[in-house]
Length: 166
Ligand code: RP5
Image (cartoon, rainbow, N blue to C red; front, top):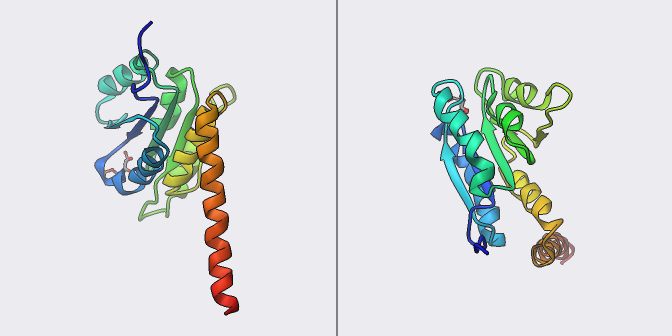
């Protein structure tokens, strides 16, 4: 049987390299949790043929989740969800003209039948964590890492409060 241990489990795709600072936060989380991923810049609008090839081959490549980030008229996550049969997490990018509401509405308001799990505007880290949680439903080792991550967050808050009480 083929060893798929180190194959990318998460596809991270963004509409422009200007989205990279936000998308890198998702990648950082996956890195921290030891989840293999592949990161790509593809514009659904400027190179639709490249996009279709990416979305059509994603399942074959072994992706279990796609994290797609885009701004403005942000069709990339929705179009990924139209083609890729597994979960798609959308990250709306902050924009200068409309503050990211344009991206948020484009991504969150999907027609019935084609869901995109939309995180907050610029919510890169939460997208990474949500992808990890989806994978952890069938991976007890990863689930353990996520529990440890939550404990770390709790301890950070406790340490800050302890400092305040000094
Ligand atoms: C979207 O348009 C991208 O996802 C990006 O957020 C936005 C602006 O892209 P650039 O003009 O910076 O390439 O497609």
